[in-house]
Length: 153
Image (tube, rainbow, N blue to C red; front, side, top):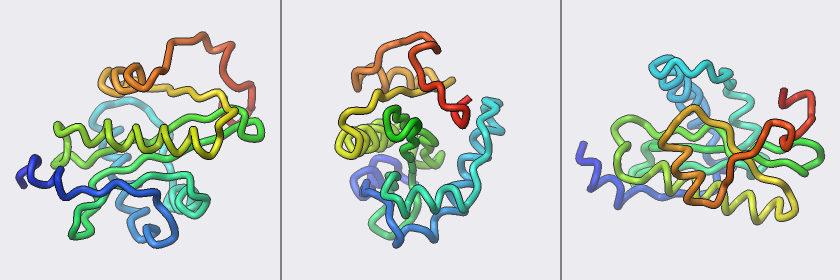
């Protein structure tokens, strides 16, 4: 697959009910990436990803032909006082063309729009995602500045 050609045809949208059919593929794509990288990220379920879509807290990237290319979701804690963009994934054949950056920016903009007063943060083991976060204006903070919500920890 020609990545450059596909990038032009990839559309990034806010996921909703019409995208639920992609949930299992998203879960498996994230799982395979976690296994390959050995990052130990918690496995999300189809139901969890579906919930994020139904709540309007997710971004999905699809080709013009409807092929799943990437995904990211928004997580909130403490009554929407803290927000993180999580689960950023790009299928391997779509990598190296700034798609992750485009998806992350869309998730960032969604978070700002939906939760303008929230403190936004990201936790990652990926140097590439750290770079994207820095470009978006994230700054390093101590764990003490993060949410105290037990469901986070």
